Length: 221
Image (tube, rainbow, N blue to C red):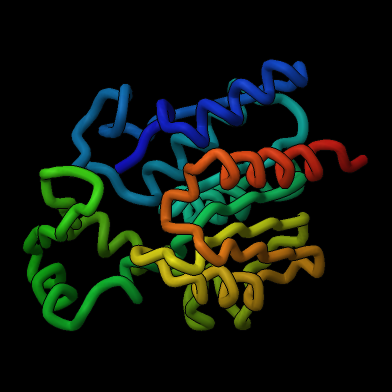
């Protein structure tokens, strides 16, 4: 439920301007400043939107940065773009949350085509999980060895990957980043755990850490 006006995104954009680097921020269709219906959004649709924008606006190699659900989309986009991706940075990445983040009752309701409303700790309105999004998410799991992306028990990405996760994250357990690190084929994967960090990791120190990680990747030959 965050958007490109958030503190992490705007800090990254400001850093890119100072460093004279190309940078692309975006809101998925139906989110933030983008038109469309949120209920029509799926991971596949949003992945294709990101790929189209990268191909249209970002010539050359790219570093993809994704927070929470964006960390899952980051992986799907990287699998599509292939060698154009020179690095990934995930902040509290949440791949496969349609699976591990739902209980049996919720899954049964979604299977029946019902929308599930969940408590939203960041605002007064509940967060809806729509059946189409859930079904598409289940089809795009990457941590499941039986899934298309996780075939053979690994995610076929070889670029450097940096994962940052707060150990006080009440939305996405930090073990998800550890699992993701194990599943990635790349040998150049580092996980940074922030002991007192929450899900957002938006404090000044958290953003400074994110910028250091991105700068380190961007400066690699």
